[in-house]
Length: 239
Image 1 (cartoon, rainbow, N blue to C red):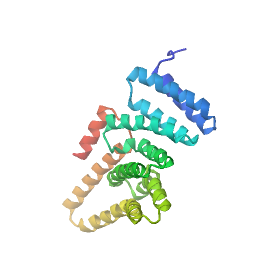
Image 2: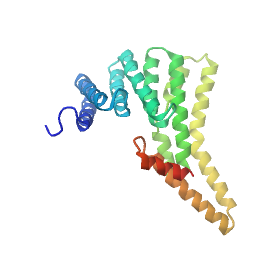
Image 3: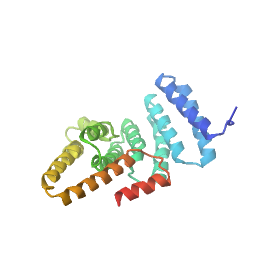
Image 4: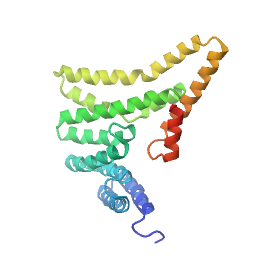
């Protein structure tokens, strides 16, 4: 009543209510709300907006939960395409949709496509972890490493289903190994650097670099949706 039926705030409310219904198992009611939210966002922002892509991701996950992988693929391809237009291919903030699409393709037995997308998302979020780990303390870095979006589950599922495929097994285990050592490598590098900073000048430079890394990591962890000011801050932190 306050904003009218085609307002962005209405779309967000529908999104939130759809998520609650999905968690309660009311999939058909949730699906209808997600579709209405997408229609509003497409109408206001144009087809393929990043906001609508986030709702399409949720709708795709709903289809996966309802054992409808073909429908999930259709919706998730639109979400991935929108993320790529807005963020660029291989961006970590679009990884969730890419991983969900890989899961849909896995259900459809299109294994090569599923593996490629899963590893693409894994590389994107692993690179993001390397950047953010530089400015986080050890506990924060380990928490981020354990909660980041990852395509490893799809890759390892494919490897387990094809034990005779040694190339696939090697690819999956290589990705797993790389993911396990990112935070450890950063901890080792810090210890080596600390041992080498004997004089005051070097120590001061080290502290300035550490402060810049901390700013960069915290900005990167804010996730998608940064405005131009946020983007400028990231550029300044990198510089």
